[in-house]
Image (tube, rainbow, N blue to C red; front, side, top):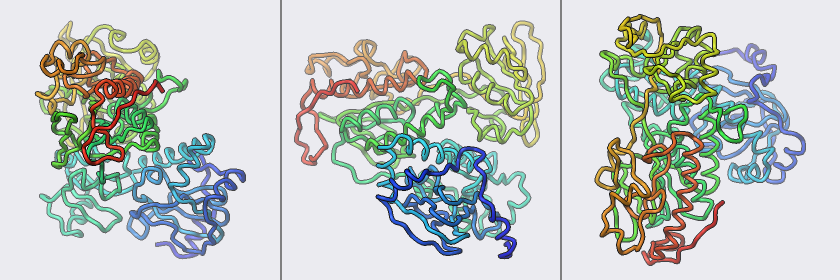
Amino acid sequence: MDTPATHARRVARETPDRYGAFPRLTQAQLGELSAHGERRRTQDGELLFREGEPLHEFLAILGGTVEILHDRGGPDERTVAVHGPGRFLGELGLLEGHAALETAVVREPGEILAVPVARQRELVARDPVLGDLVLRAHLGRRSLLVGPGGGFRVLGSRYSPQTLRLREFAARNRLPHRWTDLERDEEAEALLRRFGIRPEQTPMVIWEGQQVLRNPAPAELARLIGLPAPGRRPAVLDLVVIGAGPAGLAASVHGASDGLTTVTVDAVATGGQACTASRIEDQLGFPSGISGRELVERAALQARGCGARLTVPAEATALEAGDDHCAVVLADGSRSRAGTVVLAPGVRYRRLDVPGIERFEGGSVFHAATAHEAGRCGADPVAVVGGGDGAGQAALFLAGCSPRVHLVVRGRDLGRDMSRYLVDQVRRHPRIEVLLDTEVRAVSGTDALETVTVEHTVTGVPRRIPARALFVLIGVRPRTAWLRGAVGLDEHGFVLTGPAAEAAADPELWAPLGRGPLPLETTLPGVFAAGDVRSGSVKRVAAAAGEGAMAIRLVHEHRAREGTLVRSSGRDDGRPAPARSTSWR
């Protein structure tokens, strides 16, 4: 630990704002916030909030300085930042109700302004300038935390499926964490002895340097972090949304803003496949592009602000039809009954069928290309497999940090499945080598991937290329195994809707309604599908979001036509309430 003199010198200067993550509030903005908060004097050494504890207030500094520490009092204690007058504290977890990932300590006494989080959310919603300032800062701070691997610690073997599951959950939810590989880290055995953990009890999670979870399920880790858990709900909801990707989030925003009691569940994280996109450049309203992660984080905050309840992780395992409602059965055995359901569980990337590749999964072989995966590749060459937009975006993103990116494409025309703007950028990039008519035949390496053997399918000539990591983006499979027998699926497992659903539907089920399925309605009345999981959908973020919004318009049309659906608002007695029709928003 530092001596007082050493520590004073270390925190004497305020952290410069090199990344736009530490802006200052103007006097006008502080004045606006002051009307809704409380001024407090601070003392040297005072703890404003502690790592691991829930955050209930938005804190702005009026005088003095505050040091932000990670792992305070632990062996890895470090200063994250030092803030002075005009700056505000917290990061993304403050807006989402998570536990604090850092500790704030007063280093120079002064004064702070404390505003209750709920009140602060209302204020930034009314003031777009203040709202954008706070949101950008919180997003930037979360990125800085994720980058160096702050947060909790995960100890587990790279070959353990349970370890990979936990790390995927943390990465997809952008939860700052550090991973200790039991296969390589020399300190791992000492840490295990320190906490009395046997190897068969791993993976383990260390929280705040003290609390230990042994082989936890993602839901247990979520409760520790403070992710929203299922709460008390009406007997019958207006709407349950399955999946929190762009389609599900759009449905959540429009459903909740229309006054429908809306619950959205996702098995892993908010964002779906969109959160794995390093940059989306064809999204309307973002001329310079936006990362998929930032786009869905903004959408999730918007959905919660409209009143939707987002629950992660919560895996849907069955869909059961009732007389006037559907029941969504979750993995924990609980049921959510709703008058209408929007299915948007999304898709998962296909695995590459190559001998021995499974031992590199999660450590050197990835199915997403974000800062999390790129940070583990170092400055080494990598390979990307795939010919679609996802593969093109990944190649361009990785070329920013890797000296060589090999893009392996099975077809002979790069423009067949990839957007023209991506094709042009990929072909022009000096660090990207495109290998057409080429397939992966083998992977090799000792502790990590070292080489990838590819074959030119026309000539049959093999080639070994050096690659520290392999990014596999070769198409998708729908997450619909749990829906078989409940709604109609096509031969590939995608959900049938509209005319295709009508052809496959049970006529006796629909005859009493006097109509067939609406455009996004499935073979089950009142159940709609949107986004990538829908048969015939356009696999684009904008299209998925549009379908999510359209699904809610059709939900209102269904409710207006039936007029007998149970309404949850103010009713728990099961009696029907009048339905209403709502115009486009």
